Image 1 (cartoon, rainbow, N blue to C red):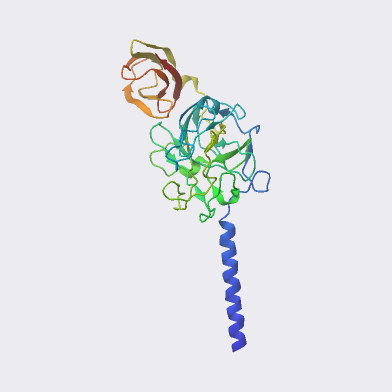
Image 2 (cartoon, rainbow, N blue to C red):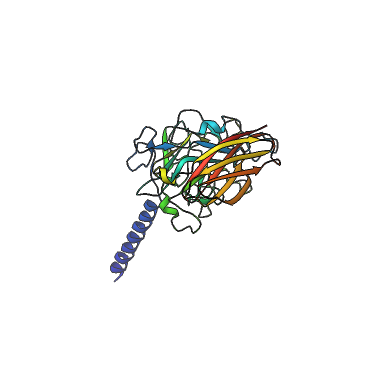
Length: 334
């Protein structure tokens, strides 16, 4: 009887060990670039059919825990547009960037877009949350997960294991994009996953001090290199590549004519008989929407005039959004 009890207990211990092993295995995610099972996509891959065309940003501090810290200063927002290799823009601690596209990104089988960072290795990973919007106003975040330990702070040049993070931009080294699948957000009632017009990338403050750190969707503190008190602090945005986008439909295209800015007004015409309702927004270089209005478009050609006398001189992103189309252009106010 004693022998049978020992055998039974050993059997239960083996089952428990196997269960814990399986749970551990399942808790891991795709590995680093070049390792079997990696989801990294090289910048020259034929899957990329387009790139972000514009970027606005709100840059964070070099060290959010230091009251005397200055703002990160490496690069600028223009370098985040286009393909990788044109330069980077560092977001600083908690900073964010908003990118727009020539045509809306849509959900299809597999990955729909990818985000590029400039890490010099497979383990020096600076991370960022990713959110998408189909109207430029409401953003929805991919469920980010970090299983990295949060008891010992990863220092400024420490290491992060790619297998312990998921749905965080910056998972892969330079020239390799971290891909995202819009299907994961198909239950968000306010989001049209076939008409993504804006992508927001938000730097993860990788401190394990809850006063400064950020958490994943499970409530785990995300541990990545911190502090990084340099001009290139935080997530270094290189590019956003489009894998699936809406086709160009000439008969439904929003045709913008005669955009002009003078005497505190913006004047423009929308030449499209099928467009009835449009949203107008103006976004400053920090990514803040400072003007937003829904208007009715007229018959075949509709002229519009916006009073912008309350805006300061500078560079802005002028955005026109309809149910099926999105148009963006930089404007200069003197």
